[in-house]
Image (tube, rainbow, N blue to C red; front, top):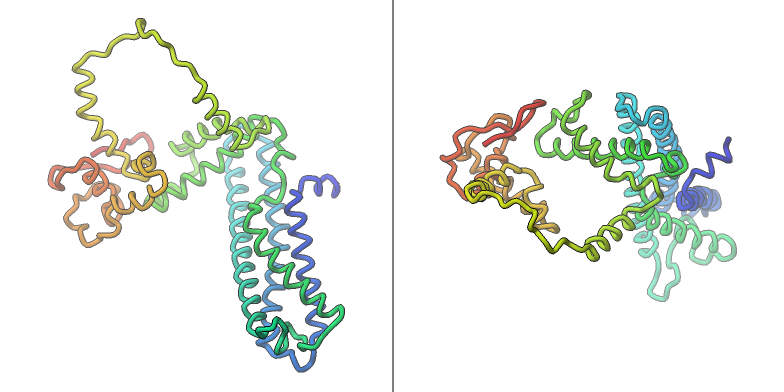
Length: 355
C-alpha cells in the first residue's frame, strides 16, 4: 500500500522533500554543536526560522498530498456528477495548496535573509570575521563542511520550490486515460477560477452558488476542451498541434455554394456591433487587443484610477461601487454619460446584462 502511494509522488517533490528534511537535520546538528560564545539570539534566529519553515513545509506537503488524493478519489467515484462533496474536496485541496505556496515564499525570504546575515560576518578576503551560525571563524573539519552544506541546501530548496508547482502526486496515476475524470477535474479548476475572478470584479455572490448556473456551464465546456489530457498530451504539445494545423490547413477555393447575406442585415450588424462588443465590460473586452497589458487597460477603462468621477457616471442595477461597468461601456463606444439611461449587470440566472 505504501509502495503504491510512493509511486504516485512526483520525483521532483521527493527530491525537495529530502532536501527539506536535510535542512532540518543539518540545522538541528548545527544548533547542538554551536559554540557557547556564539549562541546569541541574533546569531541563531535565522537558523531556527529556516529549520521551522522547512518542517512546516514538510507537514504541508503531506497534507496537500492527502487532500489531493481525496479529491482524485472523489472524482473517480462519480466523474459525471457535479456533486457538492466534490466541490468541497477541491476547495480544501486548493486552500492547502495556497498555504504551501505561502510557506514557499517565506522559505525564499528566510534563505535570502540568512545569506545576508552570513555575508555580514564575512570579510573581504572571503574568511569569516565573526561567529557564523553559531560557529567561531576558526572552526574547521566536519563542522565547517556541515555549515557550508546547510547553506547550499537552504538556497537549493528556496530556488527549486519556485519552479516545481504545487501538485504533490501525479494526477495521471489516478485518472490514467479516463476522459470523464480529466473533464471533471478541469471543470472544478475552471469553475473555481472563474468564480474567483468574478468575485474580484465585484460579483461576490458567485462564490456562494451551489446549484447549476452559467459558470458551471462554461466550466463544463472548458473541461471538455482539455480532454486531450487523457491521452497524455501536455498543454504545450496541444498548442503546438493547433499551430501546425493552422499553418498547414487548406481552405476551399470555391464559394459558389455560399449564400450571400442581405445588405441591410450587414449594415445593421455593422451599426450594432460596437454596442454588442462594448457589453463585455470585463477583461474580455481588452484581452484580444492588448494580450500583454490587458489588465492595465481594463483597470483604466473601468475608471478605478479616477474614483472621484463616480458621481458623474450613470448608476446601473448590479454595478460595482465605482460604477466601472458603466464607465467601461461608455468609454468603448465613446459616448457621453447622459445617453446611458438604464442598465443591468447580470446577477441572477436567466437574466441577461443590458445597457
